[in-house]
Amino acid sequence: LRSTFAAEDPSLSGDEADLQKMAQGALTTELARKDSTIWSAIDGMLHAATKAMSSMKGAGKDAQAKIMEGLQGTLSDRALALQNATARANKEQERHSEEYLLGLLMQHQKEWSEEKQLNVTRDFVRDCPAARELLQRHRAGKPLAPELAALMDSRQAVEAKAKTLFLQLADSLNEK
Image 1: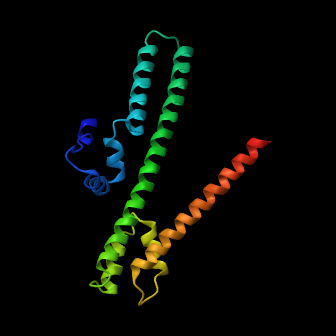
Image 2: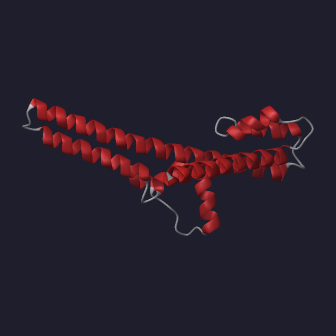
Image 3: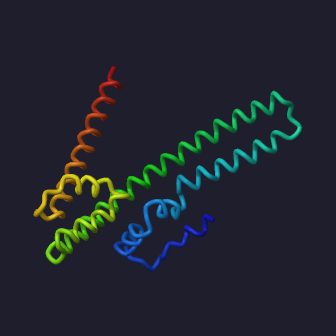
């Protein structure tokens, strides 16, 4: 299964490789990486289960219960790693979708009618919260590309502010 995802095209230049990564999706890109957190977690789960199965043979009930408890803890840790990796990939995919939609709207803002721009934006609603928010806030008669760009900028500013506040809080806790 892993080899299905590991087929990167070495002939692609930097920009072409970046475009391919964007087109194939963030999760597929993560799975194609040699040092993928996802494959690491899956390998860890398989190894832990195999080790637990072999340890269970000939062990008493109490020992088996302890082995199963350890396995459960290991599997929980690995499942959390999978969840975190998936969340990072989803966040990256959202960013790619936002950027792609912005590029489409910018490229076609003169030739596409407002209705066409709205329809294209609706196509992104499922995977792109910014598209959903843009449709809710859009003012009729205004081009969508600048509105989306402003929305994306404001989100980045909020994230940067939150990150700064978190770091300040962490520093103040470390000083005490």
